Every structure is written in structure tokens, then in C-alpha cells.
Length: 269
Image 1 (cartoon, one colour):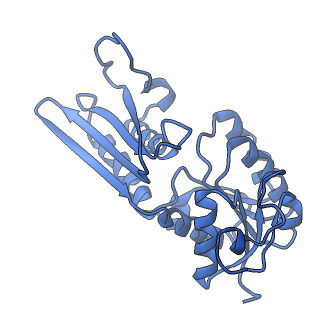
Image 2: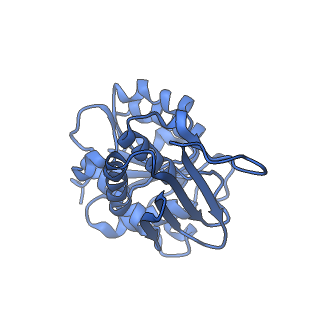
Image 3: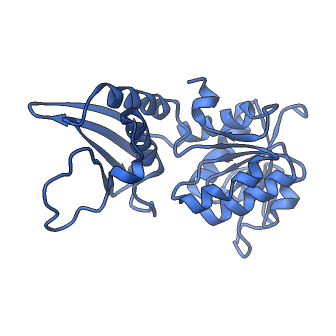
């Protein structure tokens, strides 16, 4: 076991954090060596297994990321944009593979990852599942094959607790559609319809977000023309698919050259 990569999970008390802990410890492909939570969290100092309601795992939760990173080879991070930027700098100091599944990151956050990527491997994706990344590639290909007579809409649904919209996956899909059309998403994005908006602008890529219940994640890319529609869809029913993808990325990153990568690189797509 000692030769398996040691992995730290940040935001360990969250839904994804706990799923990552379970996935890593059950994988036989990596070791859980650290868990990080924010200062003042009532899980700090406790064994992660016991905090999750199970048997002790021999890993205590810390609010000092450097302490955890010092004994690891990778960190998997599904937290918040500002925290992710801070973790990136620390992970780069420790030369860890930094797998980022954090959503809601703006251009300013992403730009701050650049210096860290000069020293460490960063794998960042709005969605870590194989199915979603295949959908991204299909979206790009379909968009490239169709002209602007086909309107493009990205519709996503998530649980009531999700704090950002559109989702990171929806933006991945929008970027793929824009790339297929040879345009910048920023120039054609329409995600603020309300009231009397006027007719749809030709060439725009629209977004709609649904929030409710415990929906894990649903994404449709709709290509709509007069008389016909093409709908590409992915349904996620278990967060384990994201945890498995993130673990795969952490293992893949071992031995890679410093730089920024995504799940297309990890999956060989």
C-alpha cells in the first residue's frame, strides 16, 4: 500500500468530500492520507471515518492544508473558487497533482492558477465523469456540423443546495458548442432571460438552470431548427461517478509534466 499515491481531500465534510473519502479508501489504487476542513469546523481534529459515522480510518481532519499536503502526492478539491486558488499555490509548493472539480470559477480565479501550473500538474474540469466528457466532445462535433439556423440551448438541473448557475458542466457544454462554431462563448452567451426579452438572437447559445430536490445532475444540449430538434442528454444519478473520475485524474497526473490539463487529457479524448 505504501507505494500507492497518497491523496488529500479538501472540504472533507461536504457531500463530494465524503464521497471522495469512500471512493479512495475502497479503490485499492490510492491511499487517503489527509483531510482538510476550514478553521472552526467541528470536524477538525476528528478521525474522518468516525466523523462520517463509521469506523476510524486513521486520518484526522486538519485545518492546516500544508500539514496534510506534506505527506501526499495529490489533492482532490471540490470546494469554492477562492479556496481553490489558495490550495493551488500550496499544492504547487508541495509539487502535488491538484485535481479541481470546483465549480463557479470565474476568469479571475482561473487566471490565478497559471503560476501554480508552472510547478505542478493541475487537472481542472467542470465535470469529472466519462459520460459528460463524451457529451462535451459530441456537442462540439454536432455544433461544427450545423449552421446558425440551428439554435443551441443548454438546460441543466441540480439539487436545491447548489449555489452556482449555470453549472460548471453546462458551461463546459456551452464552450464546446462555441468552439464547434468557431466563436467565443462570451460573445454569444445568453443566460439572463426574464420579462420582455425580444426575439432570440441568431447564433446565441442559451442557458437555463433548474434547481430542486436532490437532483444529482441532468444536462441537455438542444439543437433546434424549424421542424426538427436534436437533443443530447446526460443524466447523473450517483455522485460516485464524479469521485471515480477525480480519482482517475489524480492517478493519471502522477509523472505528468507541470501544466494545466482537463478530463479530455485524462481520458485520452
